Amino acid sequence: MKNTKLKIELPDVVGRQYDIVFGKDYLKSLMSEIEKLAVSNVVIITDINVEKLYGEKLITGLKSNLKSSIFNLISFSVGELHKTQTTVTELQNKMFELGCGRNTLVVALGGGVVGDIAGFVASTFKRGVSFVQIPTTLLAMCDSSVGGKTGFDTVYGKNTIGTFWQPKLVLVDTELLKTLPRQHIVNGLVEAMKVFSTSDKKLFEWLENNLDKILKYDLETLQELIVSALKIKSSIVERDEKEGGERMILNFGHSVGHALETLSDYRLLHGEAVALGMIVEANIASHLGILKVGVAEQIEHIINKLDLSVEMLKEFKVSEIIDLMRGDKKNDIKQIRLVVLEDVGKVYVKDHNYVQEVSDDIIEEVLKNIINK
Image (cartoon, rainbow, N blue to C red; front, side, top):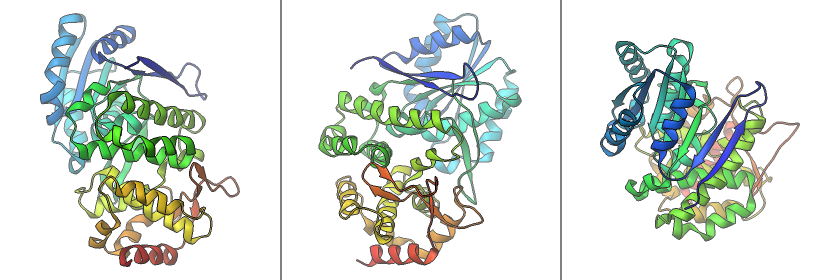
């Protein structure tokens, strides 16, 4: 695999930029960053599963190579159900107990849940400390580790409390994917598919043609998938960091998807829920007469190859899906707004708006048609 690097440069503040480094030996890159930042305290935040796999190795390596800093690891229970205010408070309290100050570096070692939680803790602890992302899942590598979104879930929905807090560095080592079950490869693949379906038709077709290689853990193909997805996402983030416009397109499939995650008590993984959401939202775009004929079917065909099907929607009540969609962060005064595809790689934009208002009646009709077909 090739070592490569992307750089994100956020234009509103001079010098606010960071690298996304791809390749082996994340320990060496992390040590270099710690030396550059000259931090006195490093806290690695992870979950108990990742701690068993990589935590001791990372701590041991850091302690043996960097004598000037203090290193600690804090872990919490696995899964979206623990992405809560309670977990955030426990982590913050532990950092106080460890004597952490403003000169602390938080290292997020894990998947999307870990990255979101650790990033939020970093953004709020003593009004903000530096942090680094070391994603260990395909979803985090393709999407959530880059862009600065942090947060946690509440009874009102997914990621309803959060901040924008950019990392100092993102380290992507595809070797870490070898320990993932297939379900989690699918989970991340869907996020890349989302990016390509809204922004790049050729990459969408590339993904379709390389599906088997990705699902067989071909690391060269996986790295190409990650790099391609992050090139698109990083360029969008540079233009619209705080999701005031264009960055909203990265939420394709998420309005329905987040509702399904919540209703399933997070039994559905994020990517699984978003995959179903993309099918629904593509069909809404077709119903509106905006999406090119055949594209919704093309999207569903690929998702079916991932062992995901609209049959999974039958366990949910349409009224409950719509109620939760109404609380989505993109909405204004509870009017549901969705990313509407025009074609593969192209989002419908009207009056400079990247999301469009869609009535409850249309969403209800499309959902019922899909569920009952």
